[in-house]
Amino acid sequence: MLKKMNKKVFIRSFGCQMNEHDSARLKDLLIERGYAICGSPEDANAVIFNTCSVRKHAEDRVYGKVGTLGEFKIKKPGLIIGIIGCMAEARRDEIFRKLPIVDFLCGPADLDRIPDIIDKIKNGAGRIMYLEGYKSKIIPAFSRKRFTGKTAYVKIMEGCDNFCSYCIVPYVRGRERSRASKEILEEIGLLIKKGAKDITLLGQNVNSYGKGLQEKINFVALLKKIDKIARSAKISFFTSHPKDASLELFKAMRDLKSIVNILHLPIQSGSDKILKRMNRKYTVAKYKKLALDYRKIVKGGNLSGDIIVGFPGETEKDFNDTFNIVKKLQFDAAYIFKYSPRPFTKAAGFKDDVTLKEKERRHTLLLDLQRNILSNKKLLCSRPGLEHSN
Ligand code: SF4
Image (cartoon, protein in one colour):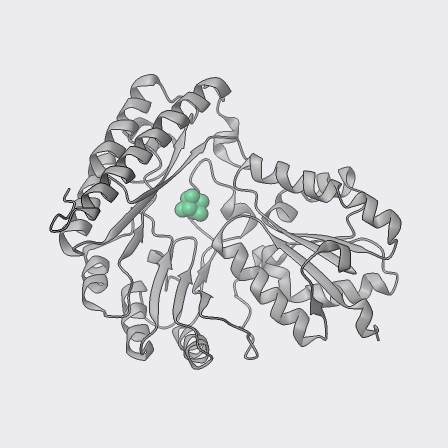
């Protein structure tokens, strides 16, 4: 049995809300096993990086951060270093080869194994790779001893079947699987009892919630059930895929008191040609109609989107189409990224023919546009009696 003083863990999370949720879950699991969570790697006996593979830049940051731990490891030879999450799945062999100081790798679907993995390494097991959980069809049950503050994440589904041509998620988080509504409601009820006020439902594509479950349920039906038990808590959700977003969803957002009127609906490009190459399964016209319907039904609702610039084959005209649709739709927030090829994906086989310099130029142009949109909105909102309309 490990002594308490040897049981301090530092966890750093990179990437999306799903990773933040996974890190919070891991903390609960470790605390239940007698570990303490500490605030800096210097104090820790184990350092864990929960990583993201969605963009190359995110991976480069992790390589840099782990590299800086080499010195600690020399001073503290028993220090255990783990890389978990999407990058552990995607870069498994490369990480072990490039970073001999890393003791274990664990994929996002295998988090429950980590307390055992740390114990085994302490007991001399050597380096461990645990990466097969993404093939699983189930999401592990939540911890009833879950710690929470005023805000909390609740995973309702995991994985993705959409295979957008640029995206690594289906390969590292596996296929779509949903949790039974009974379990989700139990978890939300518990969090509310413990004082949570803002709860975010998470899934790679929440709109396809319910697929594959025995119970007949979809995302809107789940929201209705949650609304009944929400009391004064506010419920948000993240992320919606435009091909599955519906008028039924917008009406539920309008009618259910607990649901926050924020819709994150990634558009990715304003060019039909590029959307097709991205395998997004909607057209610009369909997206535009959805956005207009949403704003008509959910009055004053917040709309945000993701955009990728410099996707293979994106011409100046394609980019201008994206620029114009962003200008037209007046997003309340837009997350703009430069394309980088990801392993396993179909687009990794396309010619990455937009130069980095050009990607940067397009990125800057869109960022400036979005900044202007936001400052105009603020100006409108700060004038009494005026509301922005689209
Ligand atoms: S919908 Fe597309 S971008 Fe989103 S997680 Fe699935 S494959 Fe990736």
